[in-house]
Length: 352
Image 1: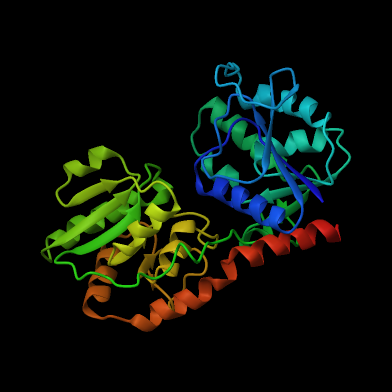
Image 2: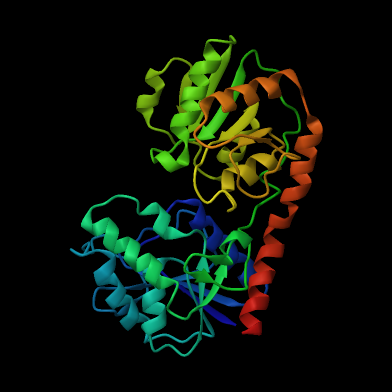
């Protein structure tokens, strides 16, 4: 099959982009022809891929090379959507896969003769929580994207019937279990190292982890909080270190350096959260508010927005080494292995 993945704009560095690059590589290994279509201003994909990349300009013309000097249009994704529709009209494919709410409309409106799918990696309207006009408009676009009649595939069972989303197809995000794997040997550390992925948004929960850490500092000595990709300003807090483990290998090493990983997200708690499954694959104890496949059998569960509960569970992990939970977690995340994920989506492409 010839599979086209169009983008409104450029490649990004969030976890969802890794999913697209990995899916493309596995599909190519299966013998399929996979291409991305991106705005010409884009740089090379942050997550490398074997897929070919086509580019389009503001006139919707197809280019074989990117152009870093291309302008960023005044109305951003709204203008690029029109250019993307024109560009897709020049191409041929068996499958076109939208992967974002801004891409869904161009895929729907293009004249390309192909089966049209929409891979949904999160319920996007929840992330447009500000009240300004631009944010409210983008929230409306994202809600509308689920009603366009595309063949929707979600990345977790919770989204099968979730608000505007109605579908019967789901494919988990994948996990490289060769890279994210238990440490062969773990050096004994004088300090207890807690870790998290740092984000500014309240719903990511970093602020509650920092509050929990401050509580713990009053109870135990030799404890540090390592925040990956956090704001350097956080290092003004005693005991906090901000790291930037770019790339899968460095990120895996980050998890393996920890005594436990903490997630305190507050929304869509039955979704898949990459740091959870990555830490579990490294057999690191996980303290979390939710996210698949976390449960009381494989992790330490806490309620949302509760720093005291987080600190209590950290002490529980320190004082009681429940290795069976880590073993359970390692078994539970095998469902996310990339070959299982990539082949399941191909089956959906063939069925429709």
